[in-house]
Image (cartoon, rainbow, N blue to C red; front, side):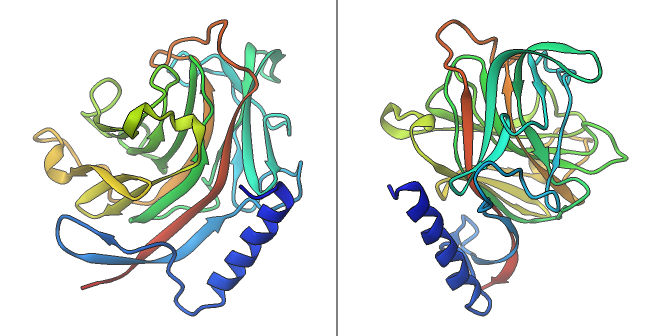
Amino acid sequence: MFPPKIYVVAKRLLIVALFATPMAVFGTPHKHADSLTREWTLVWRDEFDGPNGSMPDPNKWSIVRDGSGFGNQELEYYTDRPRNLHIENGHLAITAIRENYTGPDGISREYTSGKLQTAGHFEQKYGRFEARIKVPKGQGIWPAFWMLGGPPAGWPACGEIDIMENVGFEPSKIHGTLHGPGYSGNNPLTGAYTLPNSARISDDFHVFAVEWSPDAIRFYVDDHLYETQTVDSIPSSKRWAFDHPFFILLNVAVGGAWPGNPDSATPFPATMLVDYVRVYTLKSAK
């Protein structure tokens, strides 16, 4: 692995080289079950190459400040402090901390963390959405890379695409999930991918992605296709909620109905590192 400064310089040089090439296409075209070769054109990205200690680009992200638990019985308060969200050696660092904190709304929590979203800055309907992420580990830790459909529909009618969720008690497994009207909460459309040889997701960076078309959403880990959901996957008479623009979210939750609460062995601070987030549109099909 590169030392931090060399890594950041090399990463910037790679970005310049790629964007200097007309019609640049990142990565390898993906071969799908429908035998189509799909190539993608990059349309939005964040490489998180700002100065160490700086905050995420406010032209691309809004920071969520909330300790409501979001209907999931989460235990954290999401803050806008650099200790919970900042740029570090070419990565976005989102850090969950065990500490007593009272927000401006008077809600007190025993944990803080970070959550950010592109709502109001960037939304897209269809395409490839990917991020290279190193997740934290530990019981009760719940990192996520996901998307929501914009208002005014409200959840779950707006639709939710969970590109990557990991819960600490499943150290080798990633979940990819769709929520919509009639298939949400405890009854979503979902699949999972387990790393070979009991490798832990938290031990290294992985690329998590979805490829979203009008009639299907495909889920990938490190370009391995592990799940496909289509309009035929939803219950009869229910509506396919994935036909309008969605925005992107990144967060590290603490506790909740699904992951359970942290225990004495959970390591804090718990940091998720995001190397980049990139969004593409389909260039060609042949």
